[in-house]
Length: 426
Image (cartoon, rainbow, N blue to C red; front, side, top):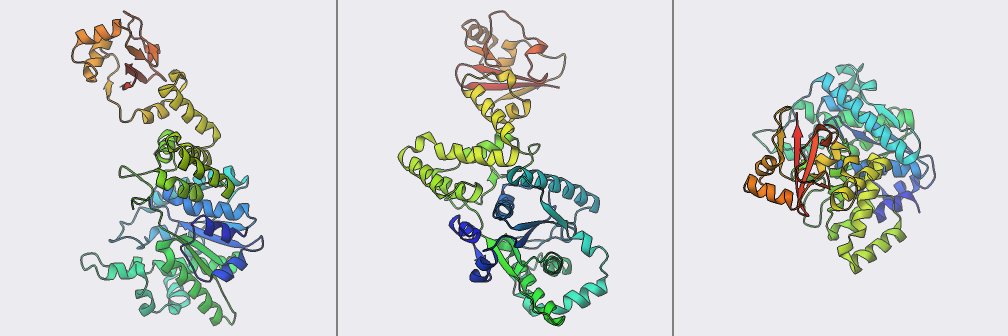
């Protein structure tokens, strides 16, 4: 299957400048394409998975994807999809974010292709360009009339309270120059990105045509965008209770990441399997059958969560997540679970923090956690064998010790079968 046709089957084609030519361009191994990632945060999030995965799919199909880091464009701010001006970030902070994202991309690509990614940084070819060169050699090929028709600009021009600065208005000129630079130096003829990037990407295609014509050459490049990913309910994909789901485990634990995908609605799971995994049509068709016949087993959701967690965090981290799930809801050993996954798994459970040396007795803890009404009731529950510490029934009369704290910092209390609480100290 031509990789273009696979992307189409997966529902990943939103707009394309010339479908026949793009399919032809991708028909033989060795084609070059790129997607840009601006360092607007210290980590990429699940919304970035679509372009990241698309570049990896291209690599696995024998092509040469480029991962462009926006060291220059990140200093400007992309107006696409924004209803007000971005706050300009400190240059040192941007550089720190860029290095973090580069490492993230490198791990992701190496894990899923076995090869290191080809990463480029647009700051390298713009930092020495003068204002005169930008205006004369790049800006001369753009008309303001034409730029005003782009959605990223039109959406802001009509907003009197915010408008658009000349800085953000010029973003598409910088992005277009990136495309031209990669076209000339890497023989890159295809740029991919989200649907909100259509105006910027097609501006680059047109700039390549005009600039090459000015140089006495014939230049042609192509644009391809992905659709905005939404759930069946119309909610924008990638938000979990209002918070972005990050690819960095320090910001979104592997357990929370796994849970985000395992909680996928039946109406969305087959769509997401196509978008976010490498599973092929026959495998997905079988999972679709299982969703229809036994949705309560959530086989498709488990496969989706396992595939994507492995893709981002690795097989070892998936095993730790599954072990944490088994320990909490099955018969595994809670003490063998890392504290980050435990914290994430019990995020919604009652919790209390006590200072070192200020640890009360267990009955008082149960009262503090609102698990019982009184210390007398707590003692009765403990004597009756209904209280568990780190998954083990508490022996009557045993006092808590430092060794009970997992990793020296967490204590998991369970009362009955399902009532969990978390004690931390520090």
